[in-house]
Amino acid sequence: MSAERTFEARELSARGHGAVSIVAVRGPGALARVRELCARAELAVGDVRLVTLRAGGERLDRALCIVARADDVELHLHGNPLLVAKLCAELGGASTSATRTPEERALAKLAHAATDSAARILLDQAEGALRSAVDAQASSDDPTQLADLCERSRAARFALEPTRVVLAGPVNAGKSMLFNLLLGERRAIESAEPGTTRDVLRAHARFGAYPIELFDVAGMRALSGAAPVHALERAGQELARELCARADWIVWLSPEGERAPPELAARATEFLSRADQAAAELRARARRSLASLREPTAAVAAVHTAFRERFSLPDEPWSPGAAVAFDDPTRAALDEVRAAASADARRAAWPRVLAAH
Image 1 (cartoon, rainbow, N blue to C red):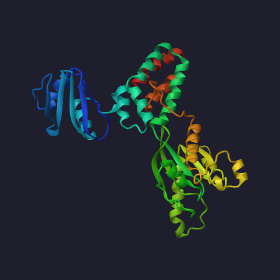
Image 2 (cartoon, rainbow, N blue to C red):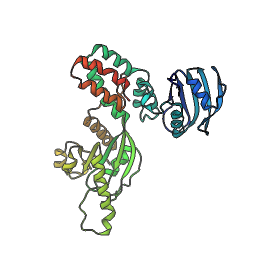
Image 3 (cartoon, one colour):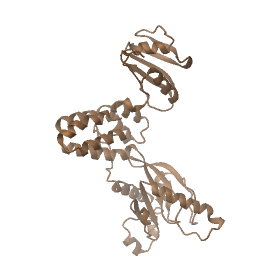
Image 4 (cartoon, rainbow, N blue to C red):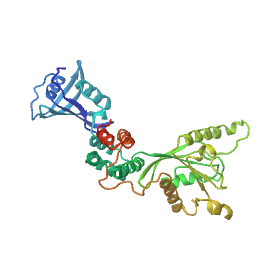
């Protein structure tokens, strides 16, 4: 490739499988390079043409080529990630989001937003909210605004990425009933027979504005000996312990007020389940209780409230037009700003929030 070619190839459409992907080739030498991939087709500024893209004698794809300027060409081709990656590699650019601006990265994530709040957060960033905040902070270095941005970004992460929540506890504690209530549909078998849930049930749910990956796991109880009849339940309990070890939050249910095991207690919130059937002494002692059968709406609301309290989250994580660090690169760069030892160091670090990739 000649030295004067300083163009880049960048995927504009959201990454992943789709009907169409759009690759922009921009910068000096862009049109010349596209012509080379089209067997030196006589493409000119203003053309909108179907072309055949080739590389190393191999036919890549048919594409719609739009030539806005000699340094600005778009290729619309089939939305196969492997095809797009190969094309960008041939063009000499990058197909990953690493070279994208924060606005482009937010727009790409918008298609996968799990809730309305997440979509609004990302749309604000795609429209420049984060860039405006960084520009303002780089010149003013206001500690209060920095703290507000960090806190909004922390809360927004729960809106943008699902939290792993496991319903756990002894057998017959009402986990499956609560699982169904939190989903708003009957997915788990509910039975008074201990050990009914032996495998793991997983579903996507929402706790208000927050997306959740919800798990209903086998109940905990002692199983005598190595009887074959207990083999499946024992395997289910082992899987339950593994999931609890990886959970962000454990909802521990017990109709007898049993405490969560020490190894789970740090990530667990304990509820007295079947509270309408519990002794008065147990109800008085329990900090949190659920009566899922008699008061299903109140039970769901209690879990939602406990979740927000656990992670210090507002009811609504979206504030119109507010900036947030919305992905891992920008959050990491924001952490560097917060950790900077002086105002000058923070001013120097702010541009890295926008350049993070």
